[in-house]
Length: 372
Ligand code: FAD
Image 1 (spheres, protein in one colour):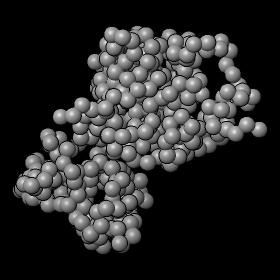
Image 2 (tube, protein in one colour; image 1 turned 90 degrees about the vertical axis):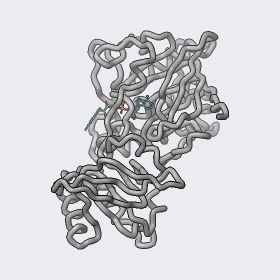
Image 3 (tube, helix red, strand yellow; image 1 turned 90 degrees about the horizontal axis):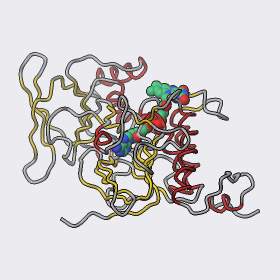
Image 4 (cartoon, protein in one colour; image 1 turned 120 degrees about the vertical axis):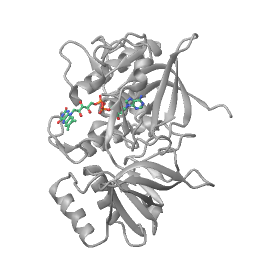
């Protein structure tokens, strides 16, 4: 197998939640190059994964915004340094990502004998090895851990080409038999999304698969899906998946074997399977990076938010220190001090007092603003 590429950057930020996004902005503002990596297909961490459409009222200067709106604003602010799309976009490309690597799990972190760090990545769902990153500094903005989609518990299923956890390719499934697995809000909202596609892009057959005929979701969504079931626009497949069969010539799912509620077995064939059982945060790799941990959190100093490893900083919900509050605003403060801590180490002559974005020509230049 050909060697995977190693990409060089000043700093790698692990985790694109609100703390990691603002960290990327602060590092860029101080003149450092940055790569921001997240296991999810969208930036925003908890804000998009757990409460995308719910209001937040305590972000300074923004009386109210949803989790998704805050993420869009943070992406827009960090755009000069991430070159990322302004609207969050899924990116499954493991070979040539830009500066915002979505769908990538940081799987390993090793200190190099010559100084700096090597970080290994893997595709978040298939676990395929991705490119490595070499950096002089690292910021862990990992929250409670990498948000990884829950699977059906069948080894080998997640690597198959027609098994998905997200709907980013849904428009390519026109006319096909799509099975959505799950009984909660996530599964039902996926069904609603597929039902809303224009006829030319809609699946030819849509099936909702769950252990039993009981769903949990907001009343409006529940009513919409139940009506579609009654109208025969959504079919039901009840049962617990126990095994699966692959097509012989390609690594694709052919059918699932189900143990039905009346203890019979059934085969459920499909063209595309979308597993929507929610996300679970996995501290996972971080436990093996040789960092001191206290109750699964990273102790840091409050001057520059450094962990037990020199030049590895940590911010946001991932950290613990006396008085720590798990709020978005705390992550913003921590990111600012971590960036200045790294700048003192990485940039010769880093000024002791911060420059002002209002008046500094240097900062305007970094932000790509035209001189007045
Ligand atoms: P997170 O948002 O948790 O993001 C961490 C990211 O790191 C994740 O996307 C994860 O996938 C990624 N990651 C972790 N490990 C890896 C790895 N190894 N490789 C790749 N990626 C990795 N706070 C407020 O201030 N105001 C509110 O009104 C508010 N409302 C909330 C409502 C709800 C329902 C919840 C659950 C939380 C709320 N919070 C609120 C808390 C706030 O969302 C968190 O404090 C904030 O999201 C923490 O940001 P973070 O960037 O540290 O971590």
